[in-house]
Amino acid sequence: MDFEGKVLEILPAVTGQSARGTWERQTVVFEQANKQYGKEIAVTFMNKGQEVATLRVGESYTVSFDIESRNYQGRWYTDVRAWRVQPLQAQAAAPAMPDMPPFAEEPQPAYSAGAGVIDDMPF
Image (cartoon, rainbow, N blue to C red; front, side, top):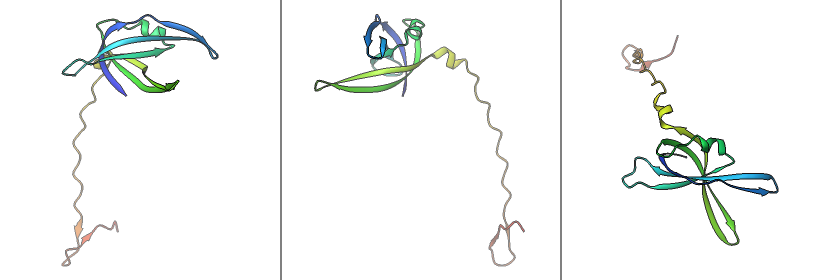
């Protein structure tokens, strides 16, 4: 899933140690674009510190994300996890697709004499 939004706040990174090694989690708050009332979305970045370092408060981005829920001691927790972030300016600079040429008209089928039946056989 994707949404377009402006960065409102970049929270400090949190690091920890697990059985699989060291991890880093950072949350960025976006204000969703194109909405009558600005919706704020807290997006989690796991082990993407370099990508978060390129984000700037006030800049607009397209965020690709997955929603993930997990159960811990009988309570459910939901994360919005980003897997790609692209600046909106980079997308606007992409060349537009050229217009398609008009389609050629298809040949009309031949009618057999007298019966009004379409003869569409190639031989």
